[in-house]
Amino acid sequence: MSAYPPLTSTAEGRESLVELLLQHIGTVALGGIFYGFHVILMFGISYSVLPNLRRRWATFSLALFLFIISSVLYFLGIRIVVAHVKALKDPDSLTLFTFMDTLEWVRCALFILSMLVGDAILSWRVIVLYQRKFWIVAVQGAALLTGFGLGLASITCMLRAADGYPFPETPHCTEIVFKGQQAAWTISLFLNLFSTVQLGRIAWSHQHMLHKSGIRRNAIVTILYILAVSSAVYCILWIPLVSLLFWQFSAQSYFFGSRVFAMNLLQSAFQQLVGIYPTLVTFLTLNNNYIFGQDSAASTFTSSRTRQGTITGSTNFKVAAPASYVARSMSFDNAIVDIARSPPASAKAFLPMVVEDSTTPHSAYQEKKTHPPGFDVTRVAQVQVPILPGHIDIMIKGFIVTKAVCDCSPYSLSGGAFVFYRLTS
Image (cartoon, rainbow, N blue to C red; front, top):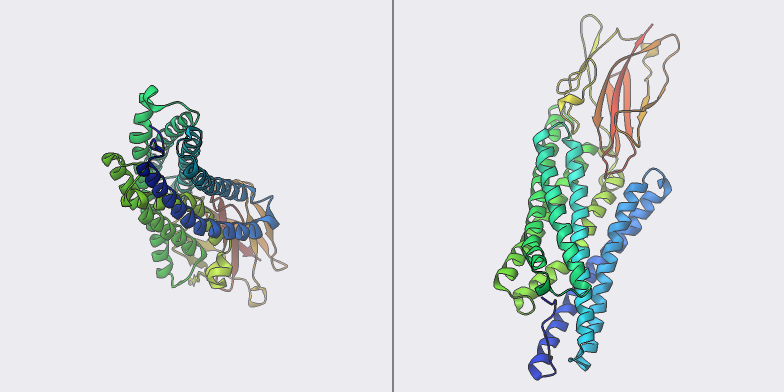
């Protein structure tokens, strides 16, 4: 079927055309508000990323790709309004309506593409955080692949329709565009709901572990809650759009009416939101310290002394990763490190140790360490965990300080490591 009904120069036809024009003006106006916010957000992302573009090129590339799609969607909407105005002067022009048909199908295809990219980014976050939980990875991966299959099939048929292939001549495309689009949107909603639950679960778990250690604020918890809350808001907005899509297709009301207008308004907003959502999360994570305060960037763990003079750091921490990430002699859920006797008071200067990894998790760590003269440094244990951008300080009181830094892409959620050393005289 056509994206537009056949109109004539009759009074009824002109009235229908005016109604469609007013609908499009309303959707373009609403979309313009969200697009303006997206433009401001891209300036913020550029300001944050460009000084370190070599490290964050993937982050910037994804944000730029989504912004380009959002820009094309918005300006296609403006072009359709212009074509509508011309059609008022010549409502019998088949060329104008064919042109508007083409623009509408292209917009639908680009919207689905943007939706698929956003789902892929969200799924990647969850899969990285839960990569040792097979059932979570399996559910996330299966839903993502199914959604991609249905979405790409719908895009193919929409582009065929835009190229002038009428649906009656391609009945399989009619089923794919309508039923396939319903299924793709439903799977996308399920994927986002499932991801929201998993992100909220891991954020709450980490917050609970930190609370037991007497810590109120933490960069990782802040960013995990950003991911969970933003995903929840996205789902809340996504639900009425999917519901209206089912109603529109079941009622076979594609062009007119208040519900169709509401559907068009929501879709116009979502054409921008699917790009704004991951870009906003990126901006918040890159500027976490500035927005939420410096206190959120560090966590301190104290330790206890045994009678033998051993410092035992029982940190009881859980940083967005399952127990299988632990290396060597350290238990992840109850991190206990036995370190040799405490050095004399004069040597209780701290031992800074920086671990950096901006590309591949759990490998090629560059270490820079200093220690008081007269003492040797021996590695005791290493815990490898996927961490979010930012840094975490772990202090074994008065004896040793370790610091993990991951200046990496919030899309990839690359990993870092905590390394514990001991001083021996």
